[in-house]
Length: 351
Image (tube, rainbow, N blue to C red; front, top):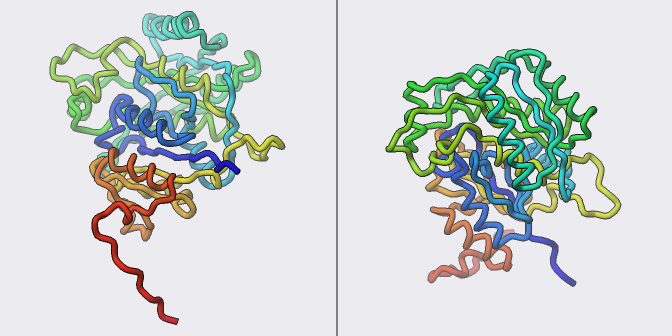
């Protein structure tokens, strides 16, 4: 009798300045490696999105953050698909030239990758994104007209047959800010990530379909000192291609299991990998109760939610390379202590 597929969830929370995964798709190599040691990897757009760069992996599921929380809590299941027609929602606030750049990117994805995109919808009001920064340095944001976003997304679903929604919203330009300069040089927090999460959470929570967001911004001036971790965002006028690639194969969300038994539920997760200081999120708190928790120390963040402070049992490792080894051992049913030169004897328990 064969064992069930080994399933790993990889989380790098958005907008908290993660040293790996806090920039432009720079945690994608981590997921590519983990996809070689796991049968299935579940992760979220923050980990996989790399602006115009992407790497489609057949055994990796692209799951928006709010949906991942619902999955971890056991409220939603994930139903894999062969493809989704992707609807495109464009913020009315985007200037004509910048809108054309994004539509050309969408057409390029259709022509070059053959992805199934539907006709686009422009919101009936400018969405009005505002960026905020918490005292910890983590970023977040607000949207002034969420009703306009939802009307556009619903129109796309009803009139085009779309089964996933890509949203492009005009974000404030802040070219001279210290936060942006630090981010471009690989030293700070993504100034857009927190607000991006608000946009996709709203659509997923309300309409229960896959959604991801690409910000529309004026091109930045050339900077020869850009960090490699931020460089994917310097390649063109749009971050849209990776979002469309991810959504085209994103699993659908279900609340009842299918008779075929092919849906994924929280009980199918074997292990979860997360930065050591970022264990306080809903998905980690839920999944760590039943899955093997591996936390990575050198992926430092602006948070201080470590396993010991939260009373969580975890295997704490120094790097993602070590995390890969931990997953291989766990999949094989080998306790990590057996791989150490020192192995303590068993001790008696008191009655």
